[in-house]
Length: 112
Ligand code: HEC
Image 1 (cartoon, helix red, strand yellow):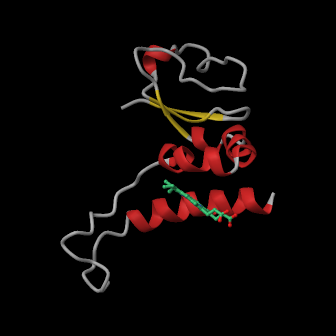
Image 2: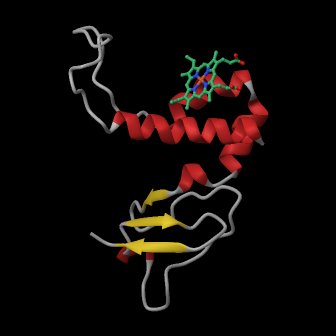
Image 3: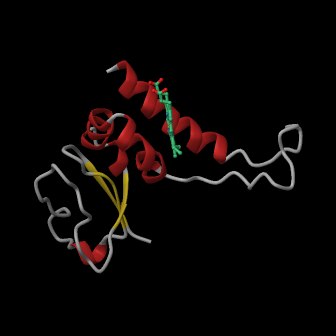
């Protein structure tokens, strides 16, 4: 459980630090250093699935990788390990642009 939390915290921290931009004060910043960018957990999983497959599996099944989901072509986003569900009465997937959450728990519906 501790390893799982460390991995989740690292994913969140990388996302936060990546959003801070380059302030020019870091001596490690050189022309060869790529600009920080959000990479997403798929990049982490590429290596970590070989290092600790059980940890990656626990992370994937936690629901955290499915926090924000884009609705494409009016289809429910893919939520592995979660039963199908629908937008509130009177709305269809065609009306929804993003779903916040929805993994085994409550969902918030966005339209742009
Ligand atoms: C190129 C391969 C690679 C990538 C990509 C990678 N890691 Fe790692 N990571 C490693 C290795 C190797 C270790 C050391 C594992 C060990 O010593 O048991 C490690 C260790 C860690 C640890 C410490 C684990 C522990 O048990 O203390 C965390 C947390 C971590 N990585 C998070 C991430 C996150 C978050 C990302 C994506 C943003 C990421 N890693 C991407 C290879 C990678």
